Length: 69
Image (cartoon, rainbow, N blue to C red; front, side):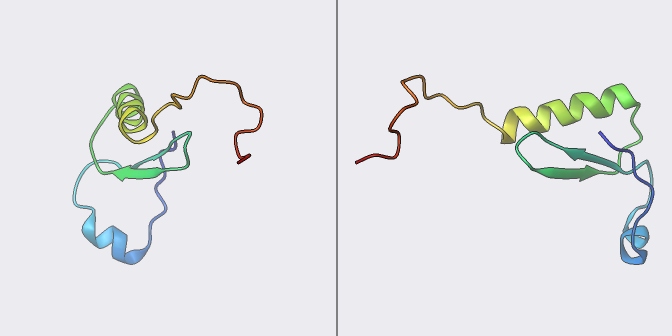
């Protein structure tokens, strides 16, 4: 989790309140929010973003020859 303050001029015009939180998930998704949260609340938000957008693989068979026809 990164709490970044460096934004472009256009982004600064649209941010009206709160902090900018940027979440980088394990599946490569980047999400941003401008909430006035504590670091713990932001971590919970990131975990929720991951739970919704980064599903765990459900395949449970052998891993050999998966691409073979």
